[in-house]
Each structure stands twice: as structure tokens, then as C-alpha cells.
Amino acid sequence: MDQIDVVRTPASWVVVGLDNGGTCNNATVLDATGQFLVDHLVENPSLVTEGPESAVEQLAEAFTGILALTSTPATLVRAVGLDTPGPASADGVISSKGSTNFSQVSWHGFDIRGALQARIGLPVIYNNDANAAALYAHHRHFGAAAMEKSSVAAIVGTGLGGGVVEAGKVISGAAGMAGELGHVQIPLQGVLEDDQPVPQCNCGFAGDVESVASLTGITNNLLPYWLKRFPDHPLAREPIPRAAKLLRGYGEKEDPLALAVFGQQARAIGKLFTIAANFTDPAAYFLGGGVVEAAPRFRQWFLNTVRENTQLRAEQQAAATFALVPDLDMAGARGAAVAALEAVRPAG
Ligand SMILES: [Zn+2]
Image 1 (spheres, rainbow, N blue to C red):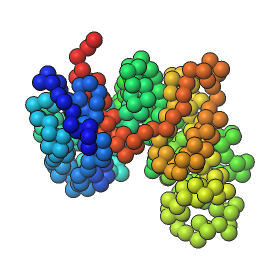
Image 2: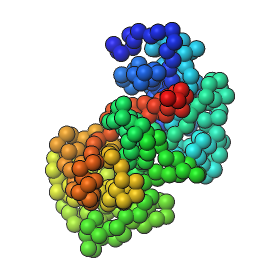
Image 3: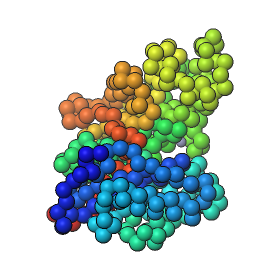
Image 4: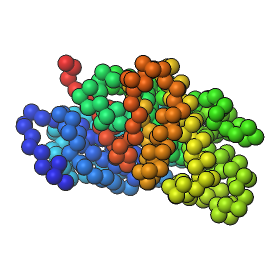
């Protein structure tokens, strides 16, 4: 909490970062010098299942709550960064088909950025949650050099999220769909076993990164195959969705079935990063998600396997680094705040 006792000059200003999730909002404050005023998770219920009106009200409450907690006068706030799960447009309009978190019909096509901006009367800058986490990883890693550097981040969760950062800014694309790394199709040679069926993704593609490197990929594709090869494994007695969630614990104990599955995930991400190397040639490759929260030995093995399967040229090997996304539970709110800071920071 000691970071809260920051001495401010009257000229200083701040931005607020709000991360909207399926159950909770997480809030943070970032000052004009790039210092976070909150060093821990500050949450309130997101109420997204009750529809947009309740959810926007909860975001407004998260905003006033974090200002109160940090003793920040509202007059010092120049902008608010907001991130939510996608799919949504670059400007924060939820997909017309809805999504996992925004399934109620009233959410379909809802402009959550515009609604929050109208509610709190401050500019709101929007990013999807994976892009916000990618942006935070980038700025945390490169610090003062962030605006000159590029990176790519893959975040393994229920799906596979990610982000592409160029010169310190997230590439959003014409329709807001840039950096959807989970749905990049990868060469499967070296990822799959000879007799393994081609994994299918919920998006309709076969053999994209998410079909392998996500919890959904484990449940739908990898575990059903590997359990046939390990019929006496204790997880064979569990329903598949539960077995998929338990798998990481087995991986930490170096269980052969679990290492086979996670090895395929790491190789798939290596294939993705190989495409990135030839596409934007980033200075850093970030890896985040559940695997990062695992035991240190396991997560290091996973990162090493990703690195070994990313084919870089000698010049790229010398220039690029591989790293884990830090502070993952706060990365969304912090990345949203970084985006807001960059949006309103005076040029020069
Ligand atoms: Zn897909």
C-alpha cells in the first residue's frame, strides 16, 4: 500500500484503468509519470450477466471506488482506459452476435465504451482484454524504451488471446480484429502425432493456434486423443472438462500425459511466434495465461519449449527476448490504463 502515499504536485494528473471480466471488475490508477498508485488487485462485482445497464453502473462504481482508495480527486483524471473480453470493435462495440461474457441480447451490438464515457463524463479509451494485457507486458518489459519497441504476446486461457504491439501501440486493425492470434492457422507438422486428428476450433477453422493452445483445445481436441494412449491414467475416470482443468497440476508433477499435451501447446505457440518473426519481427515474445501461474519449474519448461520451437534467424535471435507476462491478474487494468495514458499524454 506504500505506493499510494505518492507526493503529487498540483500540476500532476492521472488516468484510471478498468478491467471488465465475467465476474469482477479490476481497477487501477496510473499517474502522468507512469507510476501505478495501486499495487494489488482491487475488485468489485461486474454484474455483466444482469445486462449493460447494471454493468456500466458497476464500472462507474469501480471508478469512484479506486479514486477514493487512492485519495485521488476526480478533477485530476484526464481519461479512463477500459478493457473487456471480445469480440468487440476497436471502439468498444460488443459483437452483434454477443459473446461468452455478453450473452444477453441487450449486449449484442452494445457500445460499452460510449456508455461508460457518457456515464462518467470523461474520455474512455477501449481495448479488448488480451490487447490490454499485451500492452502492459510490453510497457513493463521495455520501460522508457517502450515507444520504440515492438512485441507479440500469446495468452493461454479458455481461448488463446494475444496482441501485437508496434512502436508501443497495440495494432487494432480496420475492424478491430488485428492480433486475434488464436485463429492464425499454423503448420501442424512437428506439433501433432502422426495418427492424431486435426484439431478443430470453435471459430470454424481447423488447426489454428487456439485449437491446440487453450483450455478449450485441451478439452475438445488434445485430451480425448491422449487419454486413448494413456487409458489407465487417473484422469480417464474424470469427465473431460474437469480432467482438462486438473491437467496443469499433473504437468507440475511431470506426468507424461500432461507433458505430452502441454508440449503440443508450447510447440503450437512456437509455430505462431515463427510466423510473427517473419511478419513483424518483434523485439519481444511474451507468454501469459494459466501456464504462467504454474510452478516455476513447469512454466520455465513451457517457455523454453516455446522458444525452442520458434525458428528465428541468427540476427533475430540476437535481437529478441522471450518473457512471461507479469502480474497477470492486474495486467488488463494496467494495460487499459497505459493505453489511456498514451492517448492523452501531450506529444513530445
Ligand atoms: Zn479459431
